[in-house]
Amino acid sequence: MASLSLFRALLLLSLTASALSTRPYNKGLSPNFYDYICPQALPTIKRALSRRRCSKSDAWALPCCACTSTIVLSMYDGCDGSILLDPTPTIDSEKFALPNNNSARGFEVIDQIKAEVDRVCGRPVVSCADILAVTARDSVVALGGPSWKVRLGRRDSMTASRTMANNDIPAPNMDLPALINNFKRQGLKVKDLVALSGAHTIGFAQCFTFRDRIFNDSNIDQAFAKNLQSYCPRTGSNSNLASLDPTPARFDPLYYKNLLTQKGLLHSDQALSTGESALELVKSYSYNYEAFWKDFAKSMVRMGNIKPLIGNQGQIRSNCRRVN
Image: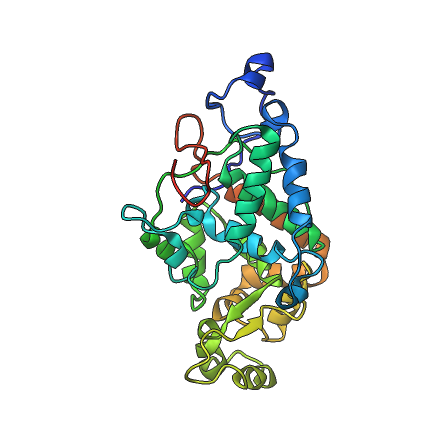
């Protein structure tokens, strides 16, 4: 699974040749990648996301119904678009990896945005991976969070790996050493772990992901646990949802405040309060939202330094759900 890349801003794309050519760009990623190829690409993504209509079941996500879904997709994808691929005889779809199954949503949103971007650009020049990365950034902003410059020019994966997704995506029952090792394998540090975990300030988790915590963990507020047990019993109700923090449609520091009162929903959330270095960051982010925003944005970009597909690697998919 590839991800966003952390290269400094590059030289602008090669003048007229870049504007007219569809040859792969080989020199890395740049926030300005589409300035000549399709200058309307990023504004179109933003408009398409904001026009997403809310259903009654989406009401909690106002003013951006699709935002929480696209943030989760981006975090779980690794930003090579592999999570978007449907299963085929040769594609072991990551949609059915344990952390994603019945959890990763918003695929139809990406389909709609892709269609609109391709129409505006006149042809498929913007990768599904880039659309997903930009949509995640715009979603964070729409929910009240920070912005950052997304490095662009990545290409789409031509395969997927359910096994790799199972191994690379942190599990909800991980303790702190396991989480640190998981992030370390990707070249990320403890600060990245704590900052990126702040994405759990939005959205929901299914009962089966936190059942063991609310019945068996000792570092949990008992009133909080008892309330959760009322709709997540010891057996059954696996798909019942609980918000990851009290304001699931707002990008704020309440996630960290909850950890300091032993109200983290997932075992892996509360684990951030069990180590000295991680706990200091949790305390800092709980009252200093500017520090949280700054570090989250930096870590989102840093996460992108993980083997992006560029140049002749991968492809620009015409349909995000299948290989060309």
